[in-house]
Amino acid sequence: MSLSDHVRYLRALKGGPSNADLQQVLGDEDTSLYFAIEQRYRDVSTNEILPKIAAYYHVPVEELQWHRVRSRRALALHIHAALQNHATVTLRLRTGETLMGRPVWWDLAAIGLQPADEEGLIVVQRQAVIDWEGSEEGHAPDRTAVSVR
Amino acid sequence: MAEDLWKIRERKQMSVVQLALRSGLSQDLIDDYEAGKPLTLPHRLKFAKILYVNDYDIKLQSTPRPKREKPMPPLEQPTPPKPAKEKPVEPAPEPKAAPPVRQGQIDFLKGLAQHLGLSLQQMEDEIGKPLSELTAPEATHWIRTFQARVPPQPTAPGEAKPAGYRSRRARLPEGIDLFEANYLLETQQAGAVLTVKMFNDEVFSGTLLGFGPYTLTLQTNDGHEVTLSKLAIAYYRRERGAA
Image 1: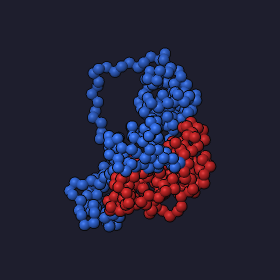
Image 2 (image 1 turned 30 degrees about the vertical axis):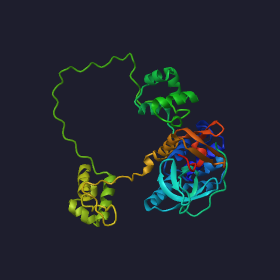
Image 3 (image 1 turned 30 degrees about the horizontal axis):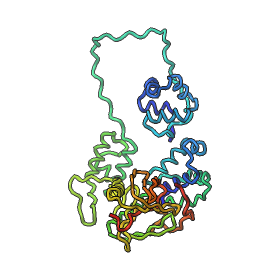
Image 4 (image 1 turned 45 degrees about the vertical axis):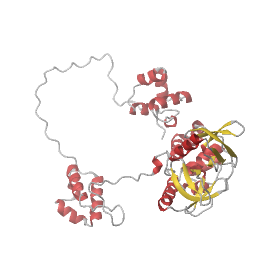
């Protein structure tokens, strides 16, 4: 899961603080950067802002750094390469499940995964993919199965 | 980064009067905001919409605009007489000297020399003078000249680029948001049952009534409608044997 998705997830867990709430804590400039981090496809975070975000959400900075190297772009490239090579990918989800299958398509929001032992597609939401085989070494923080609905 | 209201307004080439008309707020109030009065959130949202920016791009409290160094002439002062229609014939201005080379151009030329395997001396010999003595137009000319010598990069091992090829950023299917929408549309049209697994392990199953970029609406087996935020969905699939 990218830092963008993770920060958005943390914001949801905190009850969805508004822009103004964030602005009071982070200040004008950092709030703009914060929202850029949430919205951008690539990682645009800086070393300076990570401790501030971590303090705000009461999570270790390392957790944010872990997600930082798993950008949406990195996942997209991984899926795209598998799609080109008809290869199987292994996706670890925030639910704690691990799904294996061959990507049939992918787009901005989701990945159409064809499991080897099933007929139909599983449509995996991008933000649910916490880690994947081939991402950098490391273990995902234990933050599974928390409702944000 | 958040900016002062007046900076954004001026960048958007909008006057206070125009902003006042569009927002329905008084000019005095906008002047006050631009002078440092804290913005109310509804007014900031209003300005953001009018100025086509995000609300958090506008500072909650603008820094007052720095005063002009030269004071405006007093109103009482008579305006200078307008020049007569027939202007005196002025002598043709002398051609301006070309501006000197910019540091960026020098750096670029040095990079090109390195790329082409030339020493700086070899490049300067060919140009006929030291890089620092070039004018900006001359530097542009030499940049083009040396750039033309850079061999084209192959697109794939062993494959040459076609003539006139210009490198572009990779276009990924990410730019198209249709695959998931198509899948959902097929599911909806087929009246198939969709099973949705949420982040919190809850599972919803039902016929897809509708969907948007951010939500799915299902009619569950007991006849209830439930709208699920996609952000909270882990994955979904059509039920086996569905049409």
